[in-house]
Image (tube, rainbow, N blue to C red):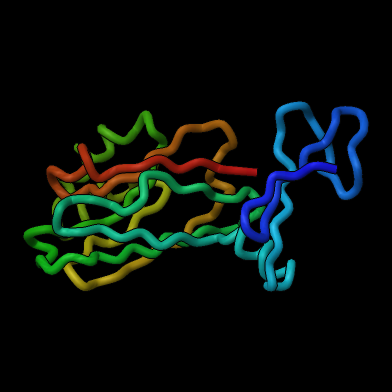
Length: 178
């Protein structure tokens, strides 16, 4: 039996066709068999791995702190918690979070600008928008919860800030994961 140890954690090395127990459900050549030791109960570890929410921060430098979001397919609903960690008011440096298919990002952002601040820069009734938060200013927080059933496996999704001039750099990707 051989393993590569990293502190208390290890990667087990199996010979193809002569795997030992415990082993991966379907051992394949070139894959990793990780053995992680934790003091947390397994139920809590599994719940953490399949969280149905994410916290995202936006700042006065027009940046989100995450480039991508993975949404577990096991979630019925998913919540995005947006916090503006800057200091500027929403009229000067407002931020929101808008989810669309990747192919719809630019057109949705353009139509949102025309909708105006009172509509949070989201065109009312826009079916391309799968979910969105309100626009917030420095020190404020908001959230949105959406049905995961709206997402399709293999589809490319994008999220962005629709405040005028922000969508070009304040954006990320979202994927439905198994």
